[in-house]
Structure formats: C-alpha cells, structure tokens
Length: 183
Image (cartoon, rainbow, N blue to C red; front, side, top):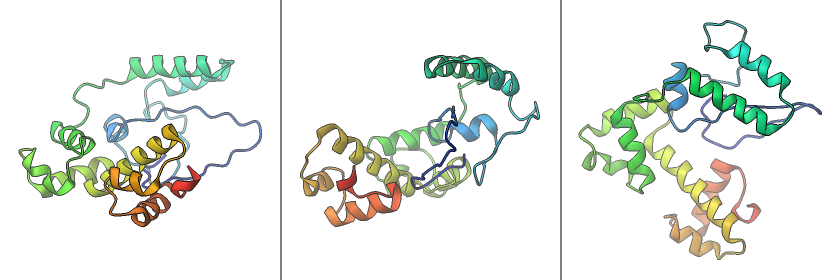
C-alpha cells in the first residue's frame, strides 16, 4: 500500500482474508527502497522481498490470526535489519514532532537546515513535516475521544492544538474522513 495522507476504505470480497505489516513512518521505504503510488500486489519475483513466497505459503496454512501474526513477526525478524534503517536526522525530526515540536522549529532541535528536513520527509515519507504533524494530531485526538467517550469537543480541540472546534472538524474530515462526533 502507498503512503496515505488520508484514511481510506478497503472493500474485500466475502470470505477474503487479509494479512499485513504496518510499519512506523519511513520504515517501509527503508526496507523496500521503493515507494508504491497505489495498492500493489507483489508478484512472485524472489528479488522483490526475501522469503516472500515461502511466507505466503506458510500464511495459507495458518488457521487463526494469532498464528498469522506470529508467522509474519518471525519472518520480519529474520528478513529485516532495523538498525540504522532511516537517517538519524529524519528519526530525530520524527521524534521532535511526536514530542509536539512545530515543524517550522525543527532546526532548533536538529543540526540540519529546514530545507534538508523537508527533503528527507519528501524522500522517505512522501509528505511534508507539517502534513505528518497534522496526521499525528488527528490520530492523537481520535485516540483521546475513543478512550474518554463523551467529551467536550471544544476542549479536545484546544487540548490538541487546533485553533477551535471547527478547525478540528475540518482536519478530521480531511485526514480521517470522519467528524469528531463519528469517532
């Protein structure tokens, strides 16, 4: 699946089964060294990813989700080396944004220029630092609303850095394709 900047709905035929691995930001490109512009069925070319065909064969024999997850985890641990996968500067920028640093102030926390940060995001994640921050903010607000049930949406908007409730609702619609009331 490509890097998505908004939520998407996936339709599957009755009886379909789906198994996948969701990577943290920038990890997918670091592992595969390729961006996918649309959902892509991986072919049987063994050069595409090591051990993919044997993994698929093992997954077909799994009888439940627990065994599928265990099989995929074992495969990933044997085929992916996660040390130094993404550039240190990008990891620092991701950490700063997760810690609520504004994308425009990243150069105060990093030893690289704002333009270089933007190039890293574009190359590794196919989005800007600001877009990543917006997605993260909406995700955090959604998780908060889910955890706390009935909440005052104006207070949630303020708590997560939206200018007001209307701004939060616009961001939810744009990124998650739902309103805060639908969470």
